[in-house]
Length: 377
Image 1 (tube, helix red, strand yellow):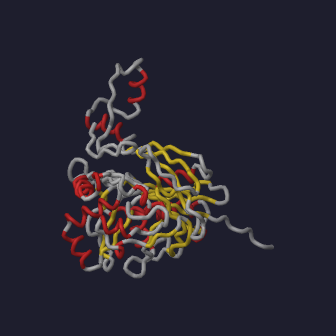
Image 2: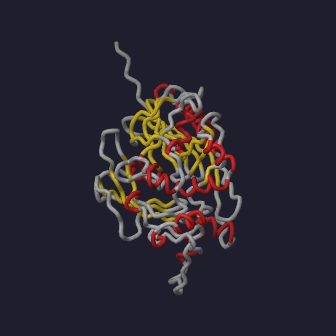
Image 3: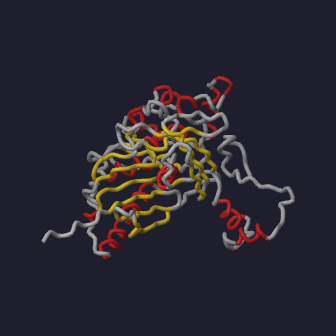
C-alpha cells in the first residue's frame, strides 16, 4: 500500500526592527504550526540615531530557525519537509560589509535613523531650486534621510573602513534581505548577492520603471554599481541555504520588504485594494496594479511585488509615518506619565475633547505627505 504523501511546510524569516522571527506554515492551509522570536538590541549612539549589529541579526535568524525546527519535529514533521524559505525584512535599513571576509564594516543604520540630514542638504544644494522631489519621476521617492542612498552616502563620508573598502572594490552594500541571503547561501564562498524589487525600490537608487540601478542616481549619491546586489523579482529561487545550519539545502524562494509582505499577506492583490499597518511606524499601501502612479500629494511610489522574473511588476502608492506605536513607549519610558501602554487607551477615553491641544510625534522628522526632516515633536 502506498504511503501517504507528507505535508509540505514553508519557512519564513521575519527580520523586523525590534525582533527576528522564524515561522513555519503547513500547506495547503497556510496554518502556522511553529515559531520562535528573539528581540534585537537597539543601539542608540545619540539622539535620532539607531543601529543594529548585523551579526546579531544573522545569528538571531539561525537561532530562531533551530528552535522552530525543534517544535515541528515534536509535531512529527521533518526539517526536510520545509519546501522553501521566504524572507521579509525591515526596509531601508542599510548594511555594508567586506565581500572577502563577510565582516560588517559598520553597524546597520536603521530605516528611521536621521543622521544623514546634512547629507540631504549637500545633495539638495546641487539641485535646481533645492527640490527634494527632483528624482521622484525616476525613483518614485523624495530625497530624505529615510532612504538607503543617503545612509550609504553618510557611511562613505564618515567611516574610514567603508571608504577604504569602496576604494579597493571589496565593499558590498544592501538592505537586510541582501545581508541575510548572501550569508545563508554561502557568504564569501559564493553567496547569492541579490535583493528583490520591493527592497530595491526603497533605496533611491533604482529606476522605478526599468527596475534597474539608475546611472544618474548612483552617480548623484556616489554609489559604485559594483557595491550593489543584483535586482531580482520577489518570487524565484535565489539559491539554497549553504551555511552548515539546520536549514542547509532548503531553497530561498521569496523576498518582500515588510510592508509589501503585509499587502500580499492581506491579499490586497487587486488594483484599488489597500492595507494599513500600525506598529513602530504606520504604513498605508494602495495597490495601483501595473500602473506606476506618481503622487502629487506627498505619497511615495513603490514596487508592491513582482511574482516571478517574467511577471509584470505591480506598483503601490505609500503613505509612510515614522512614529506610531513607539510614541506609546515614549509616554511610558521618557515622560513616565503611564505605567503600561494599555493605560493610554483608558486615559484617552476618559476625556470628552482634547481642548484643541494636539501633539505630533515627529521625533525623527515627518514623512508623508510633508517630508520635513527638520520637524520635531
